[in-house]
Each structure stands twice: as structure tokens, then as C-alpha cells.
Image 1: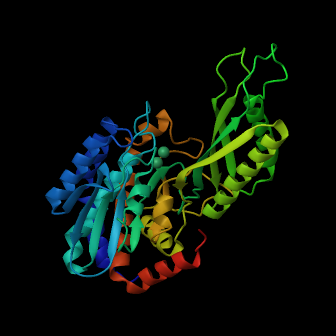
Image 2 (image 1 turned 30 degrees about the vertical axis):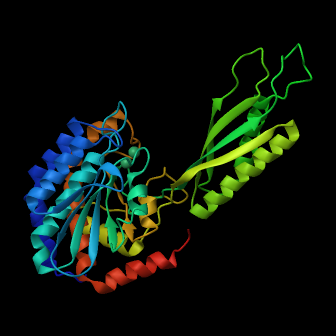
Image 3 (image 1 turned 180 degrees about the vertical axis):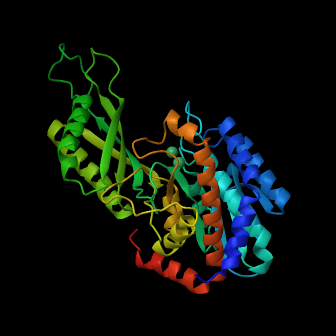
Length: 394
Ligand SMILES: [Zn+2]
Ligand SMILES: [Zn+2]
């Protein structure tokens, strides 16, 4: 590795001596869980810690009150962003462990700040709200927050020790069918049943979905199924969540939903109206140049990361949008066994457990060392950028 070993040692020491403070941050977030876009307390707590350490803080970026960018610089050079998530889940609190993501990212940022005079470059700690709903990183990416950034680094607690996250692209499509209202028995030939058409679309999906490529998936709900049993529904509407391994495959799936809907409309005498709701989340594009570094560094804490199990796709996350713009990492580090799952009460407990503390600290150290590699090693950074361009599958 290019960064001298004593730099890694110093970074680990800087993280270690802040262990109690970082754990207090993680616990404070855990004790006061805030939902997407409402993370005012978390944002205040984290920017306070960073400001006191000497970071310059811009609060409220990309039109999001609870997003922030904290910046420190040791002179001209490359720029690394540590991504902090801190939103919680309704009813379950920190059942996705974002309190640990924030504490580890802050720990790495503080450690780098302490040694930065010696290595130059800039470090950003970026507060990225609303991962669970809405996607703060989508807005931050679109607002240009990652322009000039050479690497975006974070870890996510999980039930696997995986060096990267197989996260799919995701969007929603609304399908409305227009039919004709009539009394179902008074005028049995006059009505055109829009709800019947929508039900046929679900049937077509059940059959056609079997032939989708790995990673592609459709899940639908009925959002409007008519208003009364003595009126043939003139309008019915469904909302569909679509996922695919890449953005291109997602576009193909959106087109397929359009084709299926038109086919059903032709068969039932209705008119279909298909609307894609926003761009959605991009798929995660792993950067093995940086991933390999993080894996090597966290192995120093006794945690062995492997590639994800083949053919497995998890959910979707707004880190996808960042990873398509700059070299990025999103490893999973287990705080619970593989038989468990996140988004559960057990996972929320693990996010405040002794194992959670150990993983947070190990991740902070590995993030700091990986960031130092990017700042000190021009060749590594160039290879990470080249890898992003090589794997240019939108
Ligand atoms: Zn989650
Ligand atoms: Zn999460």
C-alpha cells in the first residue's frame, strides 16, 4: 500500500481515542430516532461535533434542511467524501443501523482532520438524510455536491460481511385504466370495467414476470378500484414498484409494463395511461479498486469481507446514484447473524449493542485508512476512476 504504515497507525489511534465519544454519538442518535427529512436533532448533533473539531459546515444543502456538508482541507489535492446516514424507520427506530453509519463516518472524518496537515487534500463529511424514503443522496448528487469528489465512502451495518452491496435500480410506475361507468344490471352492455382490466394486468404480470432477467422484479398494489358496487368502475389505478440490476434493464422493464398495459387495454376495450414516477434510485456500481482497500483495512480489525453471494439482490439505495457519478464503496459489516434481517426490532437492538460498537469503530478506522489511500496515492485514485469508466453500464 502506498500510504505509509505509520499513517494508518495514527489514523487508527485517532479513531480509538475517540471511541467513547463516537459511541455516545451513535447512542444519542439511537435513543432519539428521527424519520426521513425530519432528522433535525441528528443534523444538529453531527454538525456540532464536526464544527467543534474545526470543520467548516454548510447546513441545508440541495434544498434539504437536514442535509449538510462539513469540509476540512490540508492543502490542494484530491477530495474524499464520507457519507453519513442518520434517518430511522417508523415504529422500529434505528432498525437499519444508520446511527452506526453516522458515527463511523464522523470518526473517520475527525481522524483524517487530525492528520490532514501532513497529507493534504480535502475531506468532506456529507450529511445525507432520508435514505429510507425519498433518497437524500439523489438530491445531493443532482445538486452537484459530489463534483470534484474523488471517492465517496461509507459502510452499512448488516447481517452479512460483504465487501459491496448488490443493490438494484428502482422506480415506480402508475397505471390507470379508463373504462365506462354504467349500472351493472340496469345497463349490462353499457359498462366497460376498468377494474377488471387492472386485475388482468396483475395476471399478465404474474405470468410474464417469470421470464424477467435476474434482479428484475415488479410488485404492485391497487390504489383505486372503483367507488361503489352498483357502478361498473370507470377508472382503476395500480401503483407498481419496479427493480432491475441496472438502469438500462430498469428502462426495459418500464417499457414492458407499458406493453403489457396496452395489451390488456386492447383486449378489454379500455384505455391505459402509464406514468413513470421520477427517475428513482440508480443501481449500485461497485468499485473494486476501493472495495479491495477497505476490505484489507477492516481485516486488520479481524473482520473478513467476501463478495456477496452470487445471484442475490438486496433492496435499492440512493448510494446507487452517487456510485454512478464517482468511485464509491458500500460494504456491509454484520452486527447480527445471517439468519436475521435488518428492519426488525432485533436489528435495532444490535445497532446499540457491544457488537455494534465494535463494528462501528472498525468501520471508522477502515474508512479513514481508505480515505488516506485516495488522498495520498494518485495512482490508486486514477485506477478507481478508470474502473468507474470501464464499468460504464448505466
Ligand atoms: Zn433500511
Ligand atoms: Zn439502511
